[in-house]
Image (cartoon, rainbow, N blue to C red; front, side, top):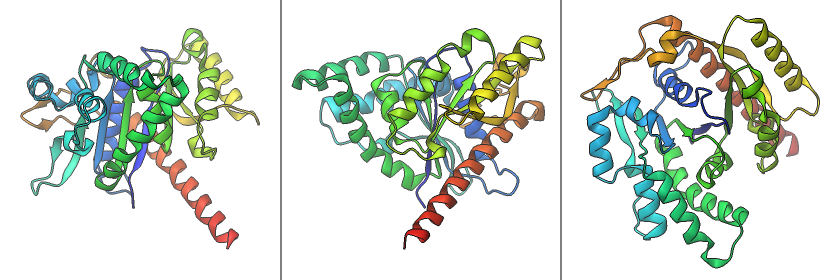
Length: 308
């Protein structure tokens, strides 16, 4: 069965996208209750490359950047210079079994991604196409490569940059699930509804699982957070809601915010969070996402049977 694709996205920065993406990748790569460990690939689409640094470590990431083994090198080679290099070849294994079986891999990013994306837009706009046509073109090219990723991994997880770039738009179009981490405060919620509605409107698959799903992140026990959470859940429950909302919440936790509860990667050995206070909230989010995806899969199967 082809792997699923999850994108972690939000127009606003500072809401914990990368921390969430890294911990979700670890949760799925580990065996969760009632589920076997998955072969997970994290694709870093952020030029800040924080997820890449987190999972690869400084030395390995430097070598990957210098060796042209990053997402920006793939885009430059395959789309700008028409060099046939499968995206799968850029997957760097950070956690493997003794028998070589993959558990967690990453396609890293670098600060050059921002420049390459700009050059890509210039290149694709030479034919007098508008931005929507450029995004569709990039999405179609990207989708071809994603099929190989789906066939080699059980789960592909995109860590996207703040805002909506052409590359992020391509990832969202291909995703089976779009996760929007949001801090339950006034500033973080500005534009949330508009962002989610825009994402869902542009998605050709209008199934419930493809609706953007908000997860409350960095939740503190304050009256302001409690009020905002109540308002967010009311919006998500409305008949015309532009987003769904997970039951699971991720609390504000110093161990997560200062280092994610991970000690880093050394010589290819990834440090799995030993503190269950850190790991447990992310496991709950991971389990709920899978429940939604499984439910959507069952609904589609029932609809096909009913149509026969």
